[in-house]
Length: 84
Image (cartoon, rainbow, N blue to C red; front, side, top):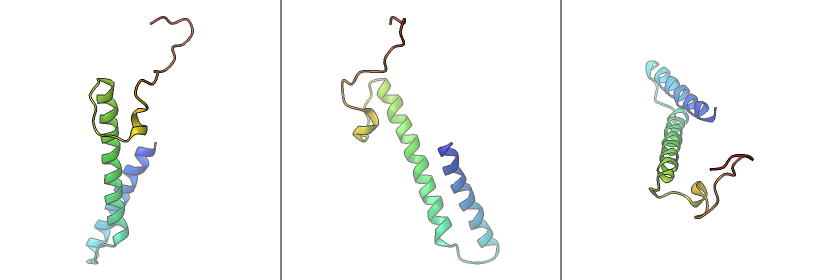
């Protein structure tokens, strides 16, 4: 849901910029900065997903420590009755 809201911000910002362009006015800073921040947020989400998927295969990319947890941390507990 949060990703959809961020995409919505980028979409709404883009719609307002085209409206100002059709009126022959200068682009306001708020929608343009909203588009930039929305795109940056989406890029960070894609990078975080890539880091987590590659970490599951043992490939480490630079990432903040809180994304991956401490080294040697136990994995999720198995439900009762499951032997793996």
